Length: 176
Image (cartoon, rainbow, N blue to C red; front, side):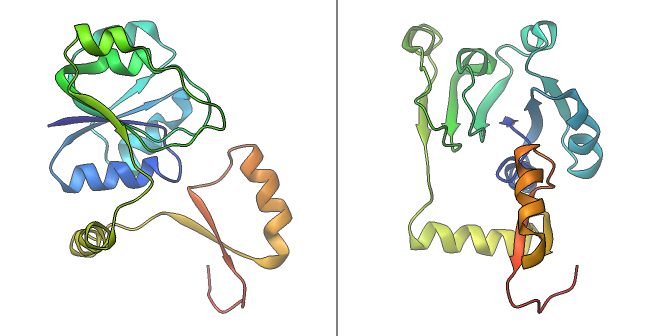
């Protein structure tokens, strides 16, 4: 199983960890070449694609069984669809403020199995994922911050300068 993970942020880094633990070959897909080292060395992805590099995207066409799109900003979907094998699946879990354009013709002609989205599962699915995460030591990478750092954290969020989530220690009870 070859899975592409689009976006290496709060959702994307956890998607890489889950896919790897499930035995998939994982390719991180990002607009930022600066995230390559992080994806390969820290998260252990097998490969990395710069989505703005047409040669890289062309070389990867039709190689993935699934693509998990975690990006919450507006972005084109067609290049992601082209990465899928016949019967491949596209899963959208990022939530852009405006609707994405989903080109239907490439889905039909390319015999892509389906596309879908998820905001979360029911109780049973959630428990299964928590159990799987515990068994495989999957955790979210966070920066623990105090309340007096919130304004700075918001500024850093706007610059996408966070690895990968801020968690606020409201009671100041935990240590970094």
